[in-house]
Amino acid sequence: MQKNEMTTGDAFDLVRSSLPTKWRKATMVGPLKEDVEDLYRERITPETDLPPMMPLFSMFDVPCFYRGELVADCGKAKAGKTLFLSILII
Image (cartoon, rainbow, N blue to C red; front, side, top):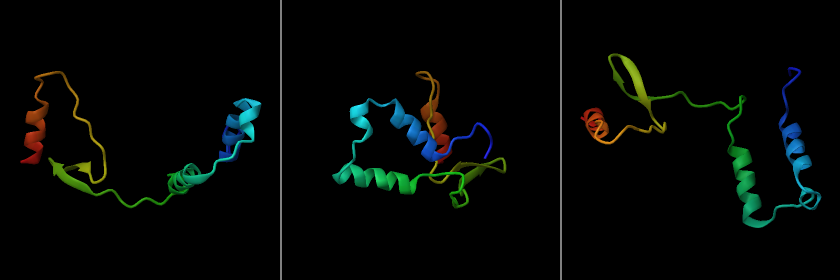
């Protein structure tokens, strides 16, 4: 670990120390605790093994639009966003 890197425990300790005293010892119970535990268990870290990315199609032999990826088509009104998406679909 490098000099300036923080571990997860250090980060949590830093957040806890910034909270008011009455909240520092608060514990989670019920569904919220289960949700937080699920999020912690499913989080992606540098050690997480991810499945290979699978492109949905290629344009000019360049893979694009991978499965599971979120894509936003943004632009001004009447700029051709719908036409662009229609071309991709066909």
